[in-house]
Amino acid sequence: MPVELISANHAAALSATLAARANRVGRGFCSGVYPITPATDCMEYLCARKIEKGTVVRVESEHSAMGVCIGAAASGARSFTTTSSNGLAYMAENCITAAALRLPVIMAVANRTMGPPWNIWADHGDSLMLRDLGWIQFYCADNQEVFDTVLCAFRLGEDPRVMMPVMICMDGFILSHTIAQIMVPEQEDIDRFLPAASIPHQLGQTPHALGQIEVAHQVASHRLQHHRAMAVGVQVYAEVQDSFSGIFGRRPADPVVPYRVEDAETIIVSMGTIGATAEQVVDDLRQTGERVGSLRIRMFRPFPAESVGRILSRAGHVAVIDRDISLGFGGILWGEIKGFTGSKAVVQNFIAGIGGGDVRPEHIKDIITRLRQQRVATEPVIMEGLQ
Image (tube, rainbow, N blue to C red; front, side):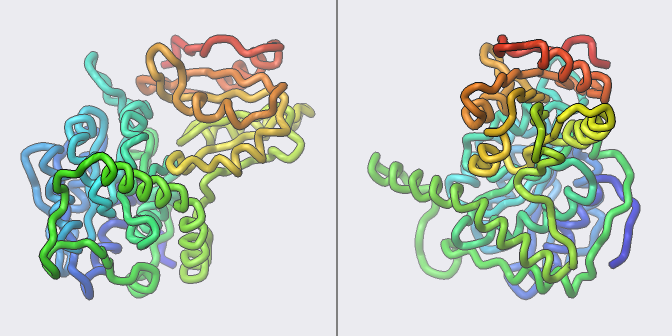
């Protein structure tokens, strides 16, 4: 399998390009794109690719970019876009539309702080702002994960049991602009993995409408259908992993990535690149005899509750590190996690790295030291001063 040295932005766009070419036997590919730092490199790379039976439309705003993707997916084409931060906020109305219409649009998000004041560095608050809209959400820790997850997202989102949009998140600059080696499959293998897209309710075959007005019981019925499809996403993703492994010879990362948790008394829970740093800290502390483990949440929606509960139920102390904050509440990941731990566990929220602060091994070690001194959890701790 060829190896390329590229950024995560380029990895996402290359993966989307290969998926687009795989649909040349179907209705083709169409993407709407608009630049915003740190996602611009992704759209620029995509614009430069040659895609048979496909086009990339350069529009005047993020709202229109998602509008193009909605139109493309509604016509049966495969569709992809990328954005970040306030661009995602401007796109939000159409993100709701894509989800509610059950259209498998794939979007790479280079996570960046919402402004003003303006800040262009990593923060999960932008994508988590949309966590309840009906998008499947993945958070990646390295460039290979970004590439693989975009491919898997097309297969997952287009599955008739799922049929909804998928968001692939990567920490802005930390991943989006970092160069690393990734394995890139041949197009013929991509074609085997991604059969032609088939959207049951696409326009242009039989007369019908999308997005018509509904009364209460119809809305409730559609929300129930969407909820059930979201819930089955973990199972369908496992099948996607099996297919990926059978064709490409390696398995994409699971919805949760546990690391040395079997006998861990203290577990660090995180998302994105903080998870990779946490694993380094675990190795360091294990050498001193400390029973520490790490749990990285990769699939945030649907939330992999069963796996999370099974792993965390044995821990006495749980440090949940959020690169986000729900103002007046605390960390969003912490809010999800704390219901899945043992009744006697001390589950402490640490908010670190918002605004792009560098969460280093020494910071995580400090978190563990502080946590072990606690007999009960306190209010979320905001780690200030991280540069």
